[in-house]
Image (cartoon, helix red, strand yellow):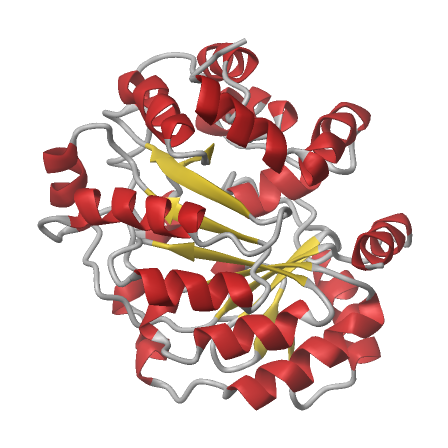
Length: 338
């Protein structure tokens, strides 16, 4: 039923993806992300009951893919309750650095109905990962988190991802990350570093074309989940940006106070509040604020993966992923590439 409602939302050209920042607090001090400095991390955060109210309200737009992020979502001890509330109507995902994961936390989240979890790991080399993330032992614990979530799956549809940020010095480690994820029964995804998180381009990939290399790896490894449409546009983004952003039409953002913006990087210009404004007014304002959007400043996966669904090639590539969990488990068991 939820898949059908998601399809109806897509067909009606309603947003299908919502980034919902459950907290801006973070236990890491990543050099390439300054969200941990955001003053919203000191503001009161909605309760699980408010998330239930907001999720029901959003369901009038149809079912959404909802990314629960931040900040570090596992800092919220009530995250399983939030997942359960959102999962009643939508597909909840969590993105985490994995440092606070335990077998009990993983089990609670999976039993609550989590659709999927992405654990951030940027390097096959642990020392470099720890240095860039600002926490010693982060790399080893992140891989343990992947294993915990993989072992805690409560439903066949649940997927575990490793997600890496492509930066100036890790392109040659991407294949090793894919292999390590495969061995643990996990998918792999990648997105390019976004300078809007820090105001600096110092960490951007700068070593020649990358799209052909990533597309070849995707062809060879069945657990490389990133959409080929999305990967094919990495070089375009790095060379100046991808035009025709669908922020506000295909996806939008809700921050940790309930304020709604067309994307996470526009949170300082909210157009509505989920708890105070009618859902019809929110949808109308999202569409109004998306008009004339010529921003080319990011190619986050919340943008590119969703925009892929509105192209023939991208949609055809994405549809099998709804039923792909058994394939990646089989690949992990056999240790095979194609």
